[in-house]
Amino acid sequence: MPELPEVETIRRALAPQVAGQTILALDVLQLHLRFPVPQTLAQDLPGRKILGLERRGKYLVFRLTGDRYLLVHLGMSGRLRLAGPETPLLAHEHWQLRLETVALRLRDPRRFSLLLEGSGSPGAHPLLRRLGPEPLEAQFTETYWIETVRHRKAAIKTLLMDGRIVAGVGNIYANEALHRSGIHPNRPGRRLAKARLLRLHAMTRTVLLEALDSGGSTLRDYRKIDGTPGEFNSVFRVYGRGGAPCLACGHLIRQIRTGQRSTFYCPVCQT
DNA sequence: ACTGGCTCCTGAGGGC
DNA sequence: TGCCCTCAGGAGCCAG
Image 1 (cartoon, rainbow, N blue to C red):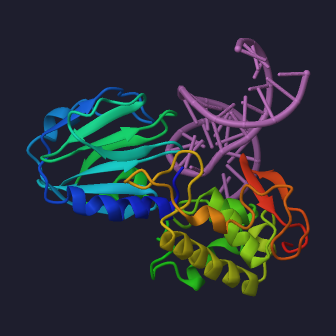
Image 2 (cartoon, chains in turn brown, yellow, cyan; image 1 turned 90 degrees about the horizontal axis):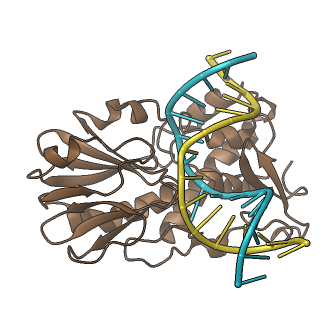
Image 3 (cartoon, rainbow, N blue to C red; image 1 turned 60 degrees about the vertical axis):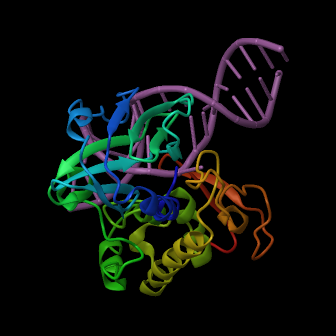
């Protein structure tokens, strides 16, 4: 699944293609996604215009006329693409938004993605309301990060991936940020000195920015909106490199589990 | 207030 | 070739 840099890359590519277009129809082929696609959507959307496309964490927010919005999350395997209205549907394409010149389609084999609607301020939506600050924006201050994490018993990697603490950091970038910070992923938050937490704060932002510059990473399912893969993979230092030598010290990268997620780290560099 | 475990689903890849 | 097992980038929910 796409993490923040991938979702932001999609947003940037998609925004100019859909902004200003009027929705002609929503076709739903599979309404059983992470949450059921609301039955009212197909009636409510036609005639509304897309005003803009925003991102919050890993959520995309399509702003519509009439003070409404569409909320899209890609889950683990969701992919958006633009297609001609007559292009045949692929397997696992669950819905399409027909616009004036193109159709926006979602393909998602695992169906962990979601399509919901709301009105008023998107920030008040139940799924967005509890999200922590955006890691690349000013609200994610050093003070906030340290005060939120310094008393916690949970593994620092789990905390970094907790959207309520900071929005949009997933498994790949948590692994990478921890390696660059020299911090063991399973170290409890409260057993980290301030200086080390500060380093992690900075490295999290650095890694996300670098990935963004590369157009995101590509594992199995993520593609940019034009179907081409992201370029960041080549810069992974630990993710997916279990058993390979650490690029910093040569020791073999270990793979363990933190929570239910795969964790990669260098036992020498990360303590 | 936190923590850890479970859950939704399909597909890919490894071992035999 | 085929079968079975494990694992996958998310994250809300629940019990303890």
